[in-house]
Length: 344
Image (cartoon, helix red, strand yellow):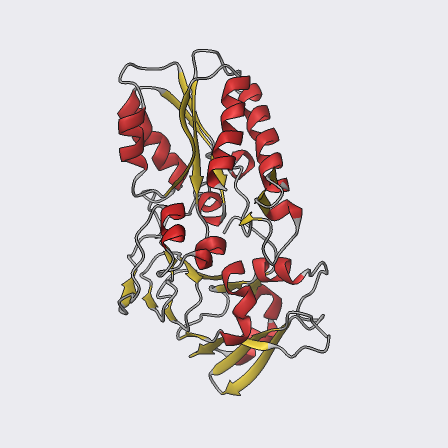
């Protein structure tokens, strides 16, 4: 499927008479520098366009995070801006990246394989059984073309279309299936080691593994992305977001995270992708029964997600909040959640 997406995106370069550097690459930020070092000509180019496509991780690259402490400007930046700076130093080119959400062509919550369990075309990149592009890819193609036109692309310019994976498809990986390892170009351990995933005092984006995790974020305004394991989260200081994405949706009944320091009025639970995957189109998930909050003790709450709202299916516990102010949480319940996709 990635090869088909790569072939499709190369058409954008050919239409604009732009030589190819890198078509939709299944990569992450750790190997971007080596890819570009080996791929880009040493002589300076007129302009290097670097649009971002893919899933939630690519979408997050264009989010500009606030300084992590009063008076600090060190972390008032985004992944795309850092990519721009590094590529400028590596290539000597005038680099233009997807440094805003408006020029980011990724789709959070999307699936590469459209023939899976979820069929909303807006969130599909490719239909392998039909060998056809999905709505996400068609929309990205249109957006990239218009972006190049708006930036007055020239025949001497170059383009590097970067693909970044998202949690939605990590569940497709198997430690016992060589085909999945080859498809994603990574090595997967059959017995992942369990340990503490430690954040820093900067704003971090921390992604859980498929195993049972203990994630301890630092002092920044962090985004902690839950995965399939039954995890324990400590947000630490700062305004933290606990993000539940589509990876856990099929197994939400088996989920049961512990958040040991949820701070009312500062921290939030992002369930926007779960609502999308449940087909919810209303305006108040709490009133409509998709989110249920139960008191467990004087300082703990159970957060339940009900995939059909007031329907016949019972809700499932998504997370246990410990050391929390239950009264403050309930009195301002809607502001403890993120219900629609947002720039954190």
